[in-house]
Image 1 (tube, rainbow, N blue to C red):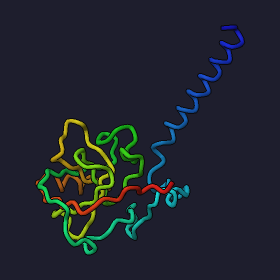
Image 2 (image 1 turned 90 degrees about the vertical axis):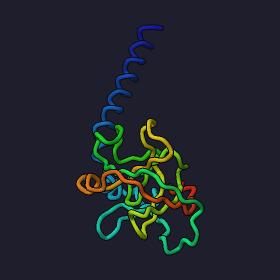
Image 3 (image 1 turned 30 degrees about the vertical axis):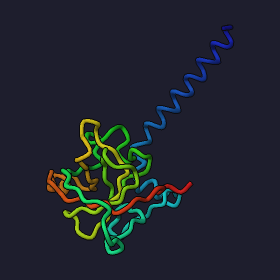
Length: 171
């Protein structure tokens, strides 16, 4: 490698490092509210409820007639606190932003719709994953408030699988 080529490679490496550092620096700022303000809501197919929660166009349980399957699972709750998530606390395992009605589960495919007896009349969607040490009989419900999540704790709930939505992100 010539001296000029070597210098060019170092310059490109520095530019990549600076760009990456800048992305990491602004990532925590890109909360769902910031993303909404930036105009990403239409792209992601999301909206906000009157209480300010990020939501998706999920069916209500009134629209559901018969569950496809019913299973008792251990449910816990989590928030977007960095110590409870990976390095991107507002982004789910499938790349979407967190929202009200989100479930993390390892035993169900992304897009699985379910109801939980602990939340009557509410439909949830699996769009996140848990740590691999948890099996298929465990779910994590995303909540906005850490106090609410702690109050929910861990409990056995009846989960009814009611269907599946294949693609939430508009392409």
